[in-house]
Image (tube, rainbow, N blue to C red; front, side):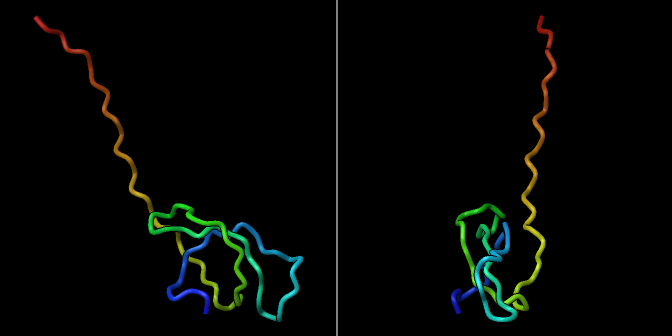
Length: 74
């Protein structure tokens, strides 16, 4: 077991040139933090059956800037 807790990874590609046991694959990807930002690039040896697809965390949208209208003074 490489990780104590599961990690979220955005997979870039599967590395086909590496020979593995049946059901296992090498993948290349970015480890994501809780906000969904990439924090590290990793190559992982994983069991295909142990990989789950998850939705990315939704980042809160920035509030739109309000444009102020000119004000007539006097």
